[in-house]
Amino acid sequence: MKVISRSVKDTLNLGKVIARKLKPGDIICLFGNLGSGKTVLTKGIAHGLKLDEKDIISPSFVLLRQYPQAKIPLYHFDLYRLKSSGDILALGYEEYLYSDGATVIEWAERLKGFLPKEYLKIEITIKAEKKRVFKLSAIGKNYARFLL
Ligand SMILES: Nc1ncnc2c1ncn2[C@@H]1O[C@H](COP(=O)(O)OP(=O)(O)O)[C@@H](O)[C@H]1O
Ligand SMILES: [Mg+2]
Image 1 (spheres, rainbow, N blue to C red):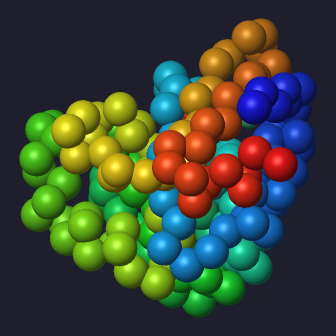
Image 2 (tube, protein in one colour; image 1 turned 90 degrees about the vertical axis):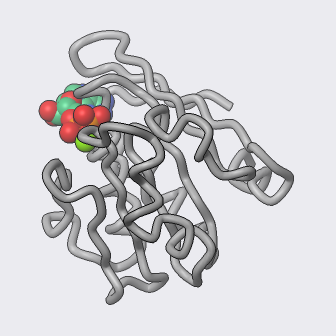
């Protein structure tokens, strides 16, 4: 499924729509270049989970930020600075994934062999200064509900 965004507001709204469908244990993997809108989308998701979107920052220096106060606990990974995919395990990555929270992963391509088996895949392409295409795919049956 493809969704076109023409503004930051559109992307925040897409995040809110996704948040409404989130269940504990869900994993969302974001793929796309620097500046494509991964963090903006995550802010929209956070807002949908009753967090203040202003509290969400790109975790650049820390690979993981946790928001236990959200409607569903939110784990936000930003793997931009992950040197080697295997380093993710030292963070307790798998315990977060398979917990009662929802996990959003920026730069999921860096996970390589450590990508989860099932997840909502979101590939973002920059089309113009403000235009982005979000391609959503269900990896595993559980995620088909996001495509409706
Ligand atoms: N349609 C759009 N959706 C999201 N961000 C957009 C859009 N149009 C322009 N932008 C800009 O693109 C940048 C996206 O930044 P960010 O979400 O931090 O990217 P990433 O986390 O993918 O590196 C922001 O500066 C934002 O203002
Ligand atoms: Mg980011």
